[in-house]
Length: 140
Image (cartoon, rainbow, N blue to C red; front, side):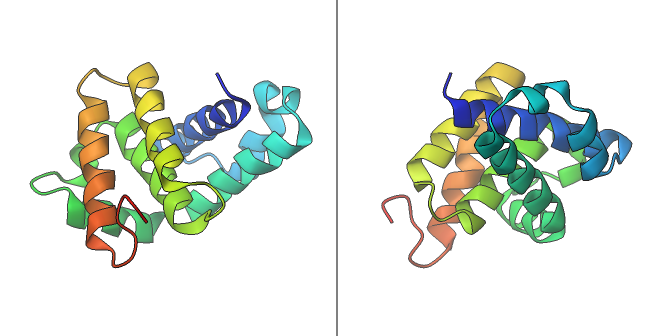
C-alpha cells in the first residue's frame, strides 16, 4: 500500500468518526496514534483532506445528491458516503493529484472498507460527477 493511500485511509476513518459522533477534527488529529506514526508530509496531507472535506461537506453533499439518482445521502452506507466526500474533495480541490489516481484510490479503499458492490456505486457517482463538469471529464 502506498503512503498516500494510508493517509487517505486515515482521513476516511476520521471522516467516519466525525459523521457518526461529531468529533472535532483537531481532537481526532491530536489523539490518533496512527496519524502520529506517519511522516510530517503524510500527516499534513491527511489533515488537509479531513479539514477540507469537512469544511466543504455541504457543497460535496449537494454534488453527491445531484448525481445519486434515487439515493438519499442519509440512506447511503456511512463508509461509502465518506469515501465519496473524500474523493470529491480531492478531485475538486487537490489539483496536483491526477484524477485517475483519485478515482482508483477511492475504489481500492471501498474494496477494503465497504461492501463488494460499493466500488461500482462509488465509481458510477464519481464518473458521473466528472462527466457533468465541463472540462473535467475522465480524460481531462
